[in-house]
Image (cartoon, rainbow, N blue to C red):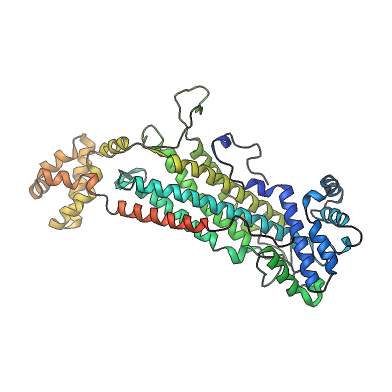
Length: 465
């Protein structure tokens, strides 16, 4: 797994999301021991191994009881991802009971199920981050619900919106991705316990009973077909995180643009002492927004290899398994790192209402052309009104003459509306539509989603001790 192998220089500005630590070797190995313990206890319940041995295995399944250096050395010589850990585990359990360790299981039964346990913890950590982001976004949307600014399409002035409406767009997408993550449960959090090819042959007639016992102890679901070639649940997680990355990248792009001096409408928080440039002391660089753009690209790029990992040939292909193992871990860590930065941005975004008003005024009223066209269209028809307003606007731009002056001088427009009516029609603050209402509605939606997420437990207990 390669995710910013040398770290990011902005790490000191954001809270630790706690996701990368889940994928440490020690934590992943502990998850494998948890699976081995659950397997032994389930097999004992099914009468496949002695209960005394199962209890000994479960009591010993702690990473701190093993000689890690011995495992690492054996891994180097044996060139196997699990056997050295199993051998050390069996040695630590002791000769009387250690022979029952890993009974009937194949490597991927343990490693993939353990990876699912780790991904479940990462999934919950990411949901909690989303909850915090949504709380901050709700506050921001409310506070700026009625703050007019220029709406922009194709990077040009379109119609006026409010900044709260812009935040509502962000919230809507984040809530949708949150719901997608919540709906993954029954497809993602599954135990893979079917033996070498998924037929349960090594467990005799007790395969389904053992699978159910392992699933119950680990808080996972059984698989309809416990095949090593079935990995769509984990792939789906990566794809949802890639979608989330797309939305967060768009937010980063918005903030990046709005921080430009030419816009200067919104700024990510910059703590005292932050250096923008080694040579230009005046610079206030959008460091966290740039991080979002970088990480978004990295995470979205993982969607393709995740889909590639579904191409198992026959009953299993270790290359596909290893590919998805790396991709899913990288996606989870990137998502956590992105959300940590988005949380800081959303919580401390600084707005400049005066600059927003000044930027709206740059088009000298032309941002209100749609309002005028529709009002005029009620008198003379929409298409004719469009053509007239279009010509006046183009003339104003070519000659650098105030839009209002040309509207008053136009025989048709000036004959229909007096100056006060024209000023009202092209007033940006009078043409915000439902911007404020939508912002407030989405603020409520964000809070409701955040409160629901807060009820999700930090971790699902593993009942093997």
